[in-house]
Length: 307
Image (cartoon, rainbow, N blue to C red; front, top):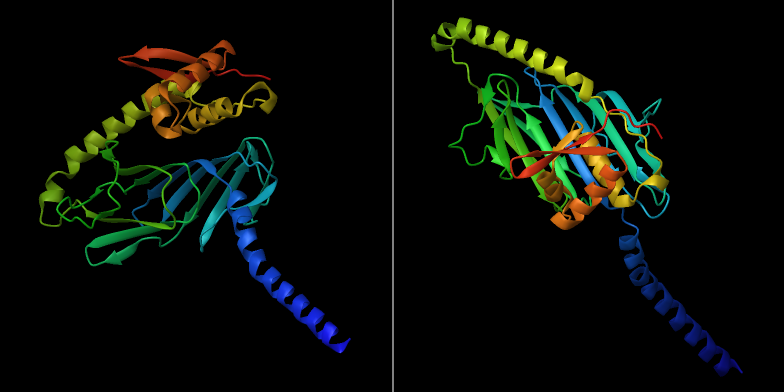
């Protein structure tokens, strides 16, 4: 009997060891399946001349299960504001939000950070790490302070290489558009002042001030004329729209209420035929209007939507 007991104990021990070895392997695919896919992530960073910044993050998700989503708030943030599905959270101090399952979840985060820029002699360096994982579509935009620029001869001034480098008349804007970026990823910009102290800056100060005043006046005039069409409040029950239709509406809303049709294809990765079909359905539901401009259309969310 003792031999049989020893044999049985040995078999049981082997079975337990095998069980402990196989469990971690079997659980890893489950973790991968439960990872949240971020359909759309837009990050806007506005750097100030005092080296502080204002950051705005727009996130669109469609989780299959009810789950907590980590906001990844940085150290030293101030003036935090979190809007979840068009409702302002108060107080917005939690690091995570409980997402609703099988419906579109929209999150908007804004905050400020002091001393966010590293000063290196005449150069200023801003770095940000992309920590959100499983992002399907990323738009990352950085606005430099007025009268600051980038040395085009320095290949290490912007990392990684941007999709666009443009200006709004007052600020240099660096823009990245990426599909399924690997994470973590580090973004870096090195910039410097465009105003020198050798007398040239003083000579152009008066005409520059006049130009700036004219730009501000024109900008205020344009803003006044278009403000009636800018503030679009879209509150649509998920039962009225499909997941793809809701995604398109949220993207147009986050782009200021207007977007070119070919840009929707670039952001979502949908085919042109699929985009056209979705927009046709939204137009039939009187949620958008399309205006032909050149070879494409400008899509606009209508002002009055009451459901």
